[in-house]
Length: 282
Image (cartoon, rainbow, N blue to C red):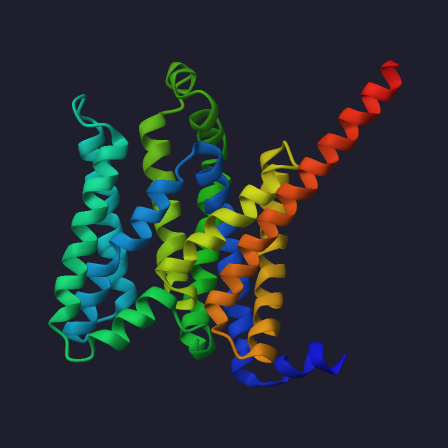
């Protein structure tokens, strides 16, 4: 059992574990709605669209979290505005803003003498360097995400399954969409320092997608996604410690692997049930 417990006797690994667990919980709440609404491309674009804000904040000596938040909000607002045009589809709007924000971010980063280090940290994060202040920020983000998820649950359900009926019932789908974008933005901004923007997408999408293959009720999907995210965090840190791999990337890789295991198990279960029904019919 030493191989299982020894890594977490080191203080910075314990810090990384707490941070990863908090990120997993936040991403489970936001990611469930991203999966149910088919907003994966939007989530990916927003995670990359933070680059100019983070890069500009780093260049000016400001907070990367604040810079990322401003850029993500600008990205979400841009998608909302362009998506209202009948001539421009939402996918097109997301693609245009994604490319534009990413290009702008690389231009800003290239003005920094240490752009290679800054860009690596932005893309892949540094979970082993999380400090107490960042743990507090993640805890606050989790509390806000829980509150938004609780208060907006009925609106989110109506928006996910029938936006027109939601409007008829007075559920205010535009407000629900704005709140949902805010929830996704919160999850991405809170998580990018831990696993980076290229990898936060794995924690945001993989656990809810894996759980959606088994559960039908939304609270169960969220709960299962949270548990799978925590499992990915613990397993990823253990693998990273013993094999010497990048911690954030390993956590995200484990999360994605859990999805494929879940998909395979679901397919095998479906085949077995189908065979049983066929045998019973005979």
